[in-house]
Length: 260
Image (spheres, rainbow, N blue to C red):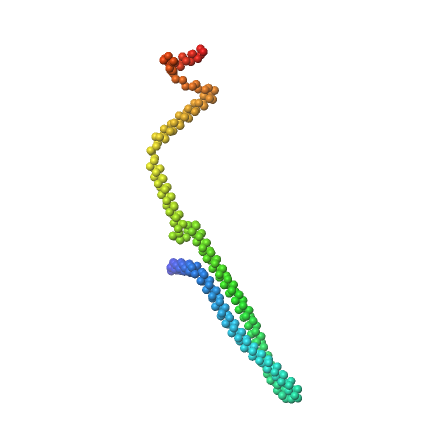
């Protein structure tokens, strides 16, 4: 059972990895649309917040209107009580002050709620303004991200092409493969040509080697004579033709030179 659990666990990881890779591929292919949709979602959220804020502010406006009504009525009953006193009618003045007291009770009971609603309304307006600024910034950021993404994709494709990697039908990679194939064929042909020429010119090479050997021997003899302070006599044939048609030996010629 442990073995099967391990197998299924590994298969699950593989499946999740493939799913994540697939999602990454989809997001990469639809990057611009995804970014734009994110901004659209932010705007939708802003609309929801605005509606909620508007409802809260509407409640505050209604509550404040009610509160202001009782404030005005309290002031009106006070003014009437003063008019009654000016007319010398204290009973009427008391009745007016009693009405004022009722209004004051409403004013006092509503004051805390109105103050809280006012603070909430101001806070909501501030938050809505901040959210609007963030959405405007998000729109600018989205445009920048899309431009940067497109530039990065273009640069990657150029780099892949120059490096000879990327898609299987990359023209540069194919050309490199063709060049390698031709170079391999040329090297093979050269190898066969070298094998075919083996043994054909061995005798000729030997003859040139012998010539070189004779030249070295002659130079060695001349060097030895020079080192011993002797100069080899010029070559004189053994017999030379005489003016009378006879021949002179080298020894005779040498004697004549000695007598002279």
